[in-house]
Image (cartoon, rainbow, N blue to C red; front, side):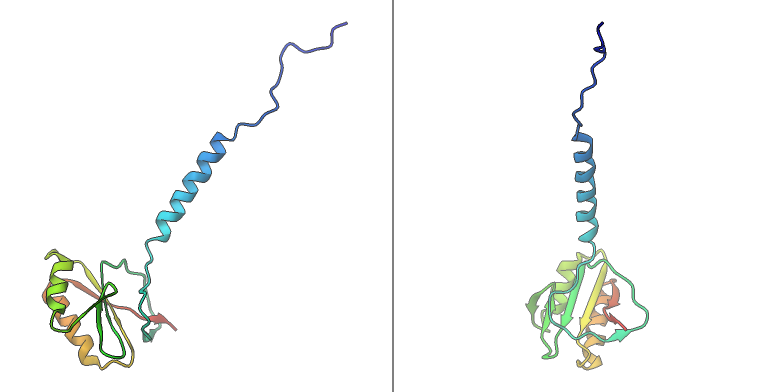
Amino acid sequence: MNLNSKHKIDPSFNMSSMTDLIFLLLVFFMLTSSFVTPSGLPVNLPSSKASSIEVQKVSVTVTKNLQYYINEKKITKATLEGELKSRLGGAGGSVVLHIDKDVPSEHLVYVAGLATSLEAKVVVATKPK
């Protein structure tokens, strides 16, 4: 009496589809995590109730000591307009202002005026309350 089956079942498990799925999830999370880029400069931002996330193209930071930075590159107030022109490329865009809360408002108005004269959208960065 022969009890052996003609159809043998392979007990091994193919992991290639699981590996593809994990790889796609990894790529998805890596791409979505790079959309939120906080400013690397230590600035004490003012707080507000309403806040939204804005994708930063150009970031202008004014520290408590009235030092100006564009995308973490230190510049002077005199060269701010030229640097903004070169970073925006004349096509508008958005400028995110990281202004320390102890800085007088005239510096905020100055930078915002330069950005709007270059037809850029101006966004003031705040921290949530």
